[in-house]
Length: 297
Image (cartoon, rainbow, N blue to C red):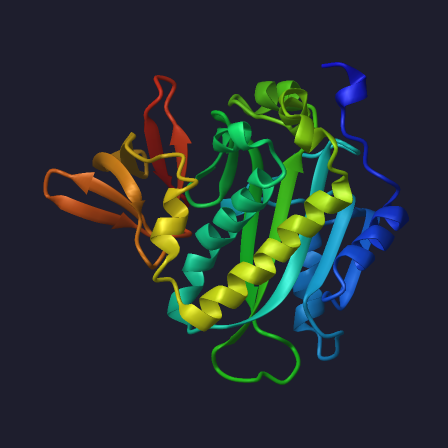
């Protein structure tokens, strides 16, 4: 890929200044050169007895202990990834919290699609529960964590949700070799999309952070009744054959057919529709193009 098309991150202080202007509703915005994990940093801040009002945003050019779902390590190299986390107050019963993972994935996919030329938007999709795909390769991943505030809680339904996102900017080929699976990067996207090529890093971050605020506000006000229809617009798995595994053993197979209002993946089997719980499974395509659902440990 020609180096002129490779995204370049501004200096951390410059990026932080631009984000503070772009996100006036955020009460704490910072971007650092290096940290252990932006999610872990915000979790620690949320649990402290005193802290600034939310929402918060923290980004880092490099994370020494970056994390993905199911305890996986997020591999990153200086300048090759766009990584940040946000913290929000959410007022929902505990039973509704698992749905926030696919909801955040849909909001992220919608925000990134809006940066592309209309003809290219379908090339970005969501692989349940929250992996962002460019064509058939993973472009970005989300980590959703929930804690209680260390300060006085407003109500039993008050939770602090930490969302972490990592977008591959370049290095997809090296990552694909290291992880033994197909990985995409933003350099590939902008090589095919003139609109996206003109979008600076701060705008990408601000669009996604704003989409998260809007998505959480909507679900608190109106619930998840419209979520299955919204999810269907970005669904990467729709109509694909999937296999459900537990400890390496097949326990279910069928056709992926969207999600329910709880954010669970729905699989059509010979005996009916079966839900797969949010936070307990991840979906990986088989080499021949089918889908595979693997139960996390």
